[in-house]
Figure 1 (tube, rainbow, N blue to C red):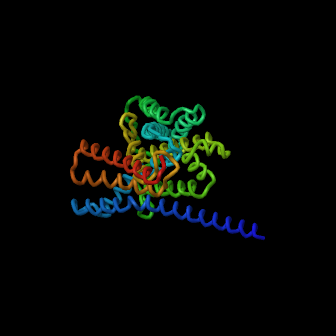
Figure 2 (tube, helix red, strand yellow):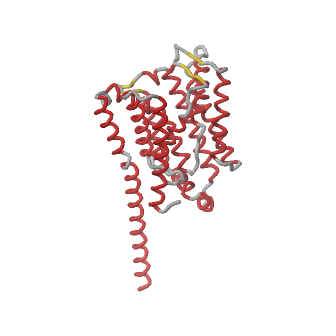
Figure 3 (tube, one colour):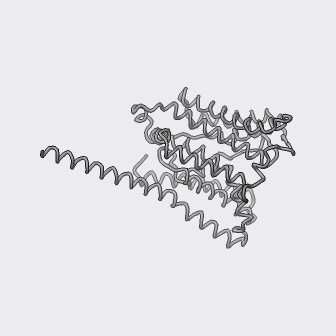
Length: 338
């Protein structure tokens, strides 16, 4: 009888500790997101005071559309970084996918297939990255750095170093029209965020992604097929880069393999880290990434309204990225991880 009571007390104590641990994790995640929200609000107020037109409905719509493509890329990057990896090739994949989408859009009577063409191109290139990383266990940084160059070459070859233009682009509505007053670009970006949240927080796959990022060896020993998780996240990153390519092509009615997507990976990485996702993996949320991407978009738009030159914009963005990494290291030191 005494043993039974002792067991019950131990179980109750364990459940209490588990509940406190879960509550602490939820609080930490909330702080990670809300921690950057004041920065976003301060930036918006500051640029409004300095320009007197930042908060106009027209400019807010512009900011939202500018942020949309980066939100999509950053969503894919979130999955990758949560596993402790990195994808430096997203900008080049976007360019290659946009080129494929534009070329396919010129097929008589079947121009809409350009959407599928762009998505397929992104998925295939992402799958290639994932196969090397998950199958051959090559370092993600090296693989995607090589991919950044090689896939840029593919984008240039696809258009023979020229701009592919289609004034009658059948899916141009994606980049230039709205549904009930909300731009299609924004609808697509927010849909990607919702789907990403569902995968990460409401599926077994999401649990496995966090587990792999938290401790890959422990995840493997627990029976998780790590290679499948890695293959999925890099394929998803490629697919979302392909979607970004379709969105870019739709907005511009054109694609260029030389310039399109250059340095987009930096904005995506900055958005993810600003949003609270840790470079070492296992920690982060998609909502934080959304706020991080909005901060990047607000910063870019505000600097343009202030007449800041491109040179200084690059310098300031670089400072933001360095600051984001420094913030990540500070989070790790205070949490005891890393």
